[in-house]
Image (cartoon, rainbow, N blue to C red):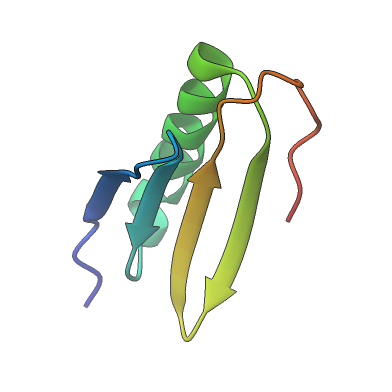
Length: 70
């Protein structure tokens, strides 16, 4: 059963790293909205990596305003 939890880290280089386990269908849209909110408020490039059933989101603060990649 999904726990709907995020682990949020701010790395030494200023990258915001958000890692999640399984997210329930009921909260999936909320999780996506949260990630869009982080990107809108901080600018920069966003990347997503799916590893072993877990989602890892990194956000850099280079303020290039690149498109989100999957």
